[in-house]
Amino acid sequence: MGEQEQQASEQPTVGGLTQAQFLSWKRRKQDIDASTKKEAAVRKRAEDIAAGRVQMNGRELFVHEPWVFDNTQY
Image (cartoon, rainbow, N blue to C red):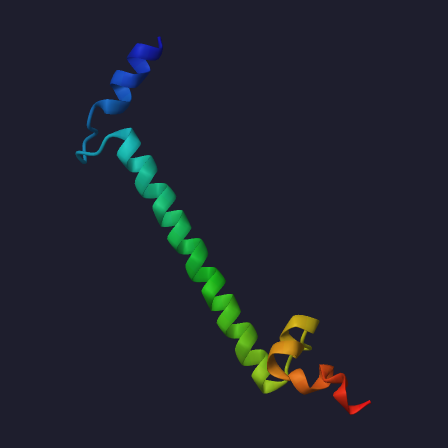
């Protein structure tokens, strides 16, 4: 049975792609879509921080305003 499944996955479909090629394309497309969404979210977060619409977490505060963590004044 495994041999038949392997042969079926190697046979081109109507569009000329094998099942393995299609699954590889689908994985790459999902990765690209996910990275695009993540980049958009990061860009929006940076814009919101710059505009003062959202509160910064500790790491963002350290990156944008390091003088807050300067203990040499004491």
